[in-house]
Length: 62
Image 1 (cartoon, rainbow, N blue to C red):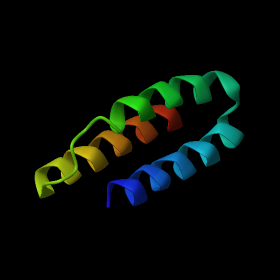
Image 2 (cartoon, rainbow, N blue to C red):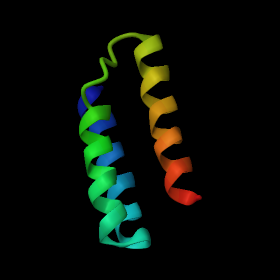
Image 3 (cartoon, rainbow, N blue to C red):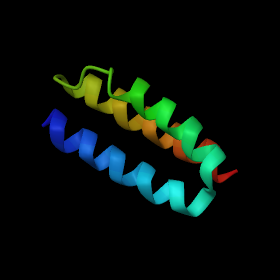
C-alpha cells in the first residue's frame, strides 16, 4: 500500500517537475520526502497524506 502511494506521489512530482521547471521541482522533492514520512496505515493517515498532497499541488499551481 505504502509503496503504491509513494510511487503515485513520485509520478505526480515527476510530472510537475517537467511542467514547472527545476526550482519548483526542488521544493516539491523536499515536500515529497516529508509526505512519505506520514504514516498511512490508518484511514486518517491516508486522508492526511492526500490532504498534504493537494495542499502542495495547490501551492504550486498559484
